[in-house]
Image (cartoon, rainbow, N blue to C red; front, side, top):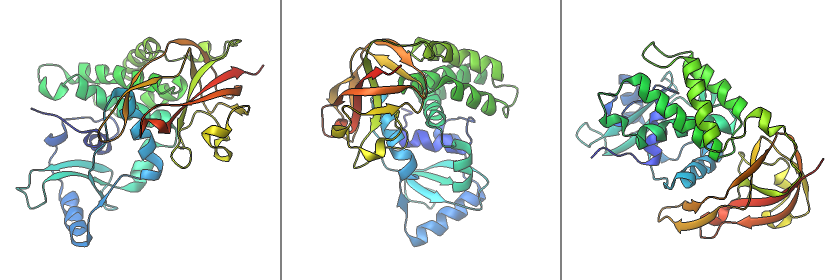
Length: 312
């Protein structure tokens, strides 16, 4: 049966930000083959720009109950963009999964806004969940709309910003052939899904909130991830946050409680039970940290929530 791991999913995304296809359906290019052979002579390296991407990968995996796994990464400056490759061991390479990529192109395509990575990852998860590789009778147009909707839902679950999401969708869709949805179609599908999954649209986020509530802060693993919801966190450990006044980096859902870990996954990550959304806070809002909560479990304890009170 066709199945992909989380990092195989990321490999697909690096082939072209949006040209999403079956993982093992893309042929090796001559340039990619050359770079893999050269890398094999000097020792393979694992991980993909871990300092920037790993925490976000774990966050996405945690939100949908998947766990990351290893993959071989080859930096190939002579490749235009990136390719995701699978070897069954019959083509001269060790059996396994490979990402061959131009690091400069990856940085340009992904940007620094966490919303961009959330959507790109979520889009590919949508292809996985909907079993698109096994549905040749479904048009590419419809598959992409379904994946756009799934990606937008992932952004909402991760408290991503709608304006940044819309900007990204319009940018990516501008490069697609005619069998893909138009930018307007994709934005509309994304907007409906973003709202239905609890995302706070710009107008809603601007409404003042008087009651306190819980927000997802980010991942803390001997330091805060760069995708954290609050600014100014580097000066504090989670236990030192109570009583501090901080600003939001982006809009955030306000919930009636933190998520609760329901199961620790064997290879990292955890499954959660969700709390209810009771409102939203706009980017740059100032909040007071009233209480801090770590999810229970070995890896899950890296996920930090905070009860906050909006400051007028």
